[in-house]
Structure formats: C-alpha cells, structure tokens
Image: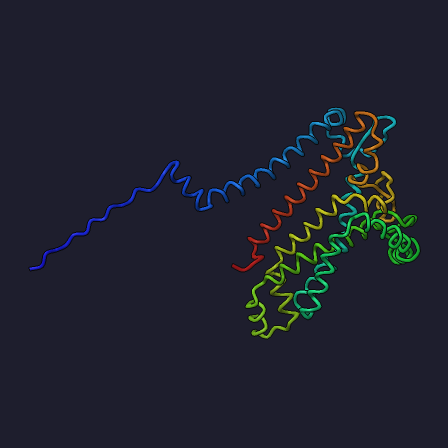
Length: 328
C-alpha cells in the first residue's frame, strides 16, 4: 500500500501599487513608457500652440473679412482690402505642376534603382539623391533664376506654346517666370524625396514575391510592375504626399521664380503668387495691424491646407490598404 503524497503550492500574490511601479521602473518599462509619452505629448502640444498662436494673432483679419477672406481676389494694403484666393490658387497650381512632373520621374527612378540597376550603381546614385534632398532651397532658387527661367523664356516656353498654344494652359505671353517655372523648380526639389522613400519601400518587399512571380513565368519587368509595385504602393503614396507637403510650404525657391504677381490666370506662363512667398515678401513691410493680421491668417490658411491634404492622403492610404494594397 503506497501513501499518496500531496503537494501544496502557494500562489504568490501579484505586486501592486508602489512596489509594482518600482519593479517596472527598474526593468525600464516605465521609463520607456514615460519618455515616449512625453515625446508624443510634446508634438501635440507644439502643434496646438502653433495653431492657437496663429488663430489669436489673426483675430483682426478674421473678424473683418470672415469667410470672404478665402475667395476674395483683392490684395491691396493701401485700402486695407485683403483676400487669399489668388495665393491659394497659386499654391495649389504650383504644387500640382510639381507633382505631375516629379511623380513619374521619381517612381521610374526608384524602380530602376531598386529592381534593375546593379547594386553598386544604385548605392552611388542613392547617395547623390540624398545629397540633393539636403540642398538649401535658396540654391534651387538661384538655379531656377539662372537656368530654368532663361530656358523657359527662350526654348521650353516657345516649344510648348507652339505645340499646345491652343489650350488656355499655355496661352498668353511667356516671361520666363510664372506658375510653370515655379512648378518645375519645385519638382526638382521634391523628386529626391519620392525617389529615396520609394526606393526603400520597394527594397523592403519580400524577395519571395519576386521569385514567385518569376517562377510562374513572368518577366523581370512584369514581376516588378505587377507584383512589387502593387505590394509597395502604400509606401509610394506616402512618399508622394510627403513631397506634396514640401511643395505646399516651399518659400524661397518659389518666391525667386514665380513672378510675385497676385492674380489668377489659367495660363501656366503667367506670373503668380503663393501663400508662402507673399508672407516672405511682405511680412517685413506690414506696418498696419490689419495688414500683419492678414498675413498671419494666410499662414493659418496654409497650415489648414496642409492639414486637410495630409488628412485626405491618410484616408486614401487606408482605403488602399483595405482594398488590397498589400497582401495579407
């Protein structure tokens, strides 16, 4: 007859309160949590203070013009009449022209560097592209003045007018400066962002995806265009909207080549104005309180435009993911 042995185990009660906090602090979890929480809260705080300050200092303009400020075309400091319509139009047109030029060029370059080029060549070119992204905007403005503006006035502009002059987009006199010139300079500035981010996204696509497509008989280009690019399209769209945000807020380079004329014109050859450039040009000349308040309200409008467009971009990216942008 065997005696049954009974083992009694005692559960250790979980630590709570101060002792649990001290243990987490020693393990590093609580410190990491606090640091990341402070960093995130700091970003929200800085953004909120920025919006609050713009809202507060634009009080005079907001109360006098109201919603009419957004679609009024007149900007006359002598008679205290201010409207943002021409500057909103110029900002959107130059950014759109920049994206039309930069997105195909940037995406094609990123595909070549990530999928088709030899690794040594891809690394060298990518290093040069990163250097281009770090060039100050005033340098791009100088290149625009001495290269793009004369080229637009003597060669590119007349060629476009000869071929597409029947359309309103390329009608009217060609001064060299204008919406199209500003858009080209912006495209040169933002294309490194599209190439750099898109290349990294394409390189992050699992190698198995390429090999599976090739094993099923696809050519290298078919595997790239039909498998790799769709897999990475969410990240590619992110690079495009990063470039859009840079184009919307660009100041010096655009100011130097757009012509700085507050008018709305269908022709891309016409000189114009953007929100950032008018703030840079006229802020030091704003002597009256209403004049200064109107310029600050333009800054608030630019902030809202960037916020809305980035919000729409986020919605578009989420819709793309739900629609099968990346296989599960």
